[in-house]
Amino acid sequence: MVDNILEINNLTVSMKQKNKPNTPIIRNIDLKIPKGEIVGIVGESGSGKSMTMKSVMNILPPNAEVDYTSFMFDGNKKDGKERISAAMIFQDPMTSLNPLRTIGYHLIEVVQRFQKKSKQEAQKLAIDELEKVGITLPEKRMKQYPHELSGGMRQRVMIAMALLAKPQLLIADEPTTALDVTIQAQILDLIRELQKEEELSVILVTHDFGIVAGMCQSIRVMYDGKIVEEGLIDEVFYHPAHPYTKELLKAIPTGDKKKELYSLTGYNETSEEREKAEMVSLTETHRLLKQRGEKND
Ligand SMILES: Nc1ncnc2c1ncn2[C@@H]1O[C@H](COP(=O)(O)OP(=O)(O)OP(=O)(O)O)[C@@H](O)[C@H]1O
Image: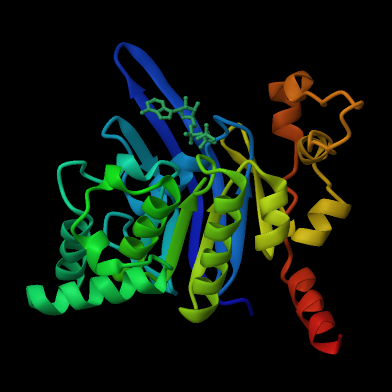
């Protein structure tokens, strides 16, 4: 049996609108995240990736209406409003950092929210965490303001803040999209290392299949508020089953400048097709066969 850190069944989110019917944004999805795995969530802009993650963290906008049949975290039923041991990092760290407060202020605040520590002890833990995420001169950084740090360093600070909350699940929503390629690779390496060291489960939301291939064990593909396909990386990359996944994979740039970029604008399910479309799901048999295969290698 696969041990799941998170299991949500039949999640639906819709937005309340004045004098108009509610707009459905997430449509009856089941989301299972196995313990200790890095799971990639892909899909085009607007497919509902961020809203799904915000539902997990219970940080949806006030006009959102959420419903689900069950919400289990680490085997325990939750009502979805309770705090779960999860932390989230976003594409733009500046949206989560107060420009008027020092880096130290942010980190100490997180420690003291989650652990009973004196200011001095919290300061020491914060400095240690900055070191762990690869920030040089951590004592100096504690006194600096967010704008004094580079984008990559700010994302490291966000990761340090997330880890100080001692999460079992880390959700990274497009964590490297705003960074240049070398820094991107460093941040992804850091997430991979920390996942192993801290035995974290990670959800990595991205629109980049390359990142998924290099980082994740399994993948969920979202389209129009639904998970249309899920599977282990090799299965989905080499044998995509859902027509939308096939289109997404065709749209990966090949690096060949002569080849025209493939556009997905033509993909549009009719509601009839949508009704008929079966969710292509990852079976436990696939996963177990794969794990057995890896051990025999
Ligand atoms: N505050 C809001 N009020 C109303 N609708 C919203 C709100 N936030 C998002 N939406 C809508 O919800 C849908 C899903 O958005 P979401 O941000 O989850 O997509 P996404 O897949 O994460 O896209 P991106 O990659 O661009 O972040 C979109 O149609 C979006 O317009």
